[in-house]
Length: 63
Image 1 (cartoon, rainbow, N blue to C red):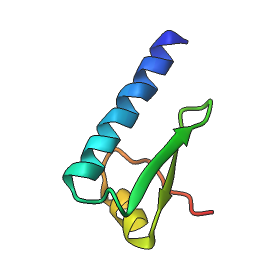
Image 2: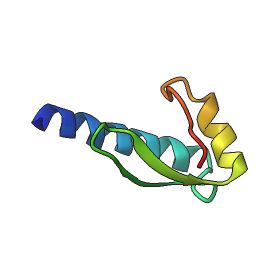
Image 3: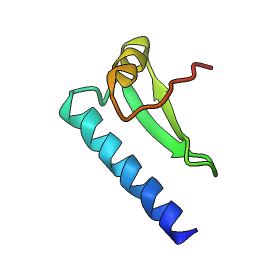
C-alpha cells in the first residue's frame, strides 16, 4: 500500500512538472486521484489534446 501511494505521489509530481514546463498550467490542472491511481485532471480541449500526446498517459477519458 505504501509503495502504491509513493508511486501515485511521484506520478502526480512528474505530471505537474511536465504541465508547468510545457506552459500548459492554464490548460490542464490536476485535481486528485482515485483509489486505482487514476489521475483526475480538469482540462480544456487544448489540455486534453496535449495530455493525449504524452507517452506515459495510457488513456484520456472525457466526461
